[in-house]
Amino acid sequence: MNYEKYSEVIIPPESDLKLPTNNNSRYFYNDKIKELVLDIKFTDTTNTFNLKLAEPLIIDSEHDIFLDIVITHGFGEASVDNMGFLLKIDQFNIQTKSATSSTTPNNNINDKILIPNEGDLHKGRKFNYVGTITPSKLMNITGKITNMADPPGSPVPSDSRLIVEFKLVPRK
Image (cartoon, rainbow, N blue to C red; front, side, top):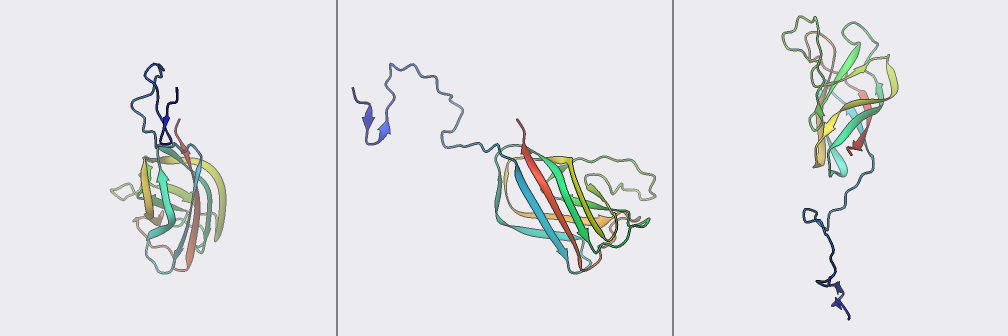
């Protein structure tokens, strides 16, 4: 008996196949590690950035985010007010909690990534957990970077540059 009709496979009723009813047959889960590289050039003292991705970044399941590489240039030598940078990325669920003896009423370290300043040219290779990202389709990456100065929100120097590489690892 031929069960093919017009290039479609017809499953005969006597074939006791147990097909999952909650899966979409056109859904292909991609469980590969994704890399996201941000190259931020600051041409003025604006702390914010809005980067348009060359192609959409499709996150099809919840992913853990790891900071892999950080390169900075032109942020100045390390000092009391410039000992590190605070990076906030709006699309990431960063849940950093901290305690500080700072006189600032709001703790400016919460929900940000801390990047130590190791001099005028900083290059670090890490694989530190940052947070999570839920399923989405990203076209832009937006955020803000400041230094550790008190009060918070000090501008970054103009003509400075930050390159950050993140690894997005799917949760099992």
